[in-house]
Image 1 (cartoon, rainbow, N blue to C red):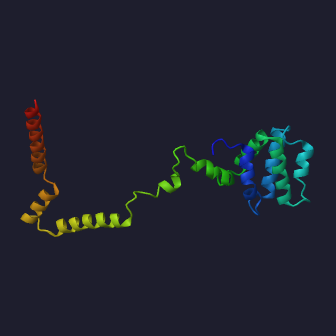
Image 2 (cartoon, rainbow, N blue to C red):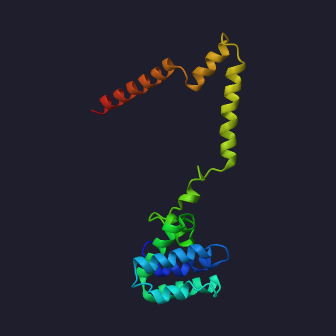
Image 3 (cartoon, one colour):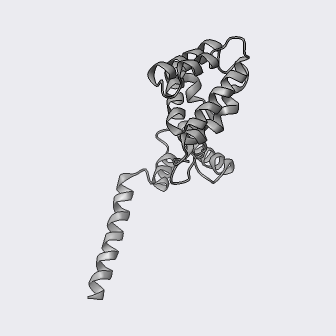
Length: 183
């Protein structure tokens, strides 16, 4: 969803961010301080102190901070993401909203799923082709190189450039005769 606002993304990521163990107390403090120092209009000193209160549980402080940012608008939510990216890039890259952005494609193709799909013929087709190739390789390996069977097999399979050249020549001659007959 490329037209998703940062507030929408933050709403989507709230459960992920507030789950136990995702953000440490130090990381939350760093994000709050960055928002306060760089953008005092987003978090005033008084608000920053409230969200950094060590007496309150981390989960509630973080939930209150996210709710506060969503009330302030899209720009504060964007700055929260920027602070999160600067201070915890590994966590930022694993956010649910980031995964949606990475997989959304205007063509509707999911690149994660598409890289595993080689063709739509299934495993039976693959094993049939592999068996034929393995059988031919085994046949060519086991045959005596002076054997006429090997030469005939090469000709049947089209490995001989002379045979291919003859076929191409015959097709060209037929085409030329057909086109001259039509004039």
